[in-house]
Length: 154
Image (cartoon, rainbow, N blue to C red; front, side):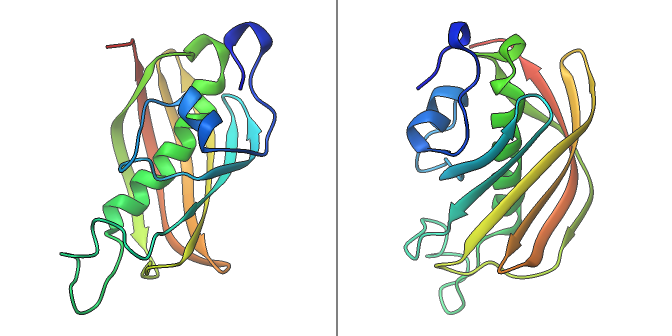
């Protein structure tokens, strides 16, 4: 585990370190591991979609599919790791400010492994804009341009 005095953690790392960086917690934590990290710039991570994910009971009982909004949320949480790993944002809270050019191209099913990527193209003060993508087995499941506002703690 890392703190602001020792700099950002070196990838790869798992949930314990992810939870030390972003405020999300189970059952809403949708990133299991970070594979590559350039704080404030880009991140690559992974989420193992659980066969018993809480959303599958109702979405859909006879054809379980991970809701697209949760796939976008997984991308955003992975991106939040990059934003909050930058020492100027340590301990802050990321909020969605926009989702643009969002496309869903493949369903995500129980047991899939989501490969998550987010690269920030523009950062101005507390606003960051990044291109995000989630893939399964090399096929894009969802992609979007995400805008994030980094606010203060609680």
